Length: 378
Ligand SMILES: *Cc1c(COP(=O)(O)O)cnc(C)c1O
Image 1 (cartoon, protein in one colour):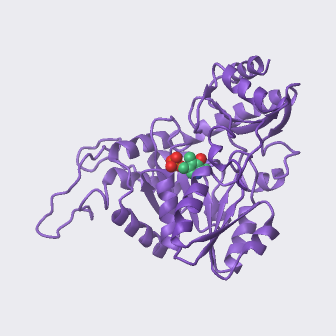
Image 2 (cartoon, protein in one colour; image 1 turned 135 degrees about the vertical axis):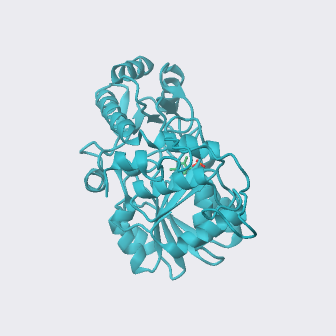
Image 3 (spheres, helix red, strand yellow; image 1 turned 90 degrees about the horizontal axis):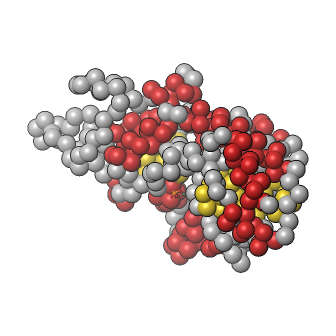
């Protein structure tokens, strides 16, 4: 297999055979001329079912994850929805992280539960707790690592073992790490989910999702849902995502460099009570993270001294770090999970500390980012 950046730039992206166009064209078409009834060119029939720009992205993401089959969706949630529907039926059970991405928790708790799918939320860094939560009806173990917003680490290989012992599948939402830092299929996972909105797109200008698996039968079910339910991305959106992917490796290196600088600065600041970053030797998941990740990513969370008021004040005061939800773009973002991304889980098992601030560290100059945080912390 060629190197990561070579795949990011070339996989699925051969020059266009008719024009030589080096860049994959945006195939803005809903339908395709047939050479006689049923005479499809390259299998393309209608753009809900397939589109060449989308195929290029699907091939590229699959190769970056080291998987056989990739499928692109209109959002990360649409991809999540497709995995759940492809694998679960009423009466089935799923194990989810007790700090699952809020949208995933909402989909499972507020939509799938009403269709008869049961779930248990457990801390995924506790492999025994995951094993104990498994029932005869368990179809999936859902994993996120690093987690959002607490940046906990789950041991993908260990969870794959637990899931497979129970004839269940392990799904890993790899949005926070990106395939540059972590490839779950190689560690035993059955399916990888992405919100391509984040690091893969990388420029905060497009919403999208993707699934990758080696399992041809599951991929067939996912493709069937793609065309039957139709939560597919448009050609311009997949083209933007493909463009973002090309620079994933260089962006991730810089996100990691900058996050390390920010972590060092926060760690010695008197207003900071604690920093959560898997790269820190004292992080409880550090050893596992070091084993399964290339580096530790661009997400940093920290707790402040002085409670929620101080946390909110820091979020108000930054000038470079933009106060916004989402993550993974070139620009740095700051948010208060308790009041923003995780407001919907207040009072549930997924509630997060209210003195917690989450940063998506961008690729600006690290000195400027550190200076901005210092002035905001006062
Ligand atoms: C953003 C995100 C999602 C949802 O993706 P959308 O593209 O917003 O639908 C799922 N999982 C994680 C970890 C995310 O950060």
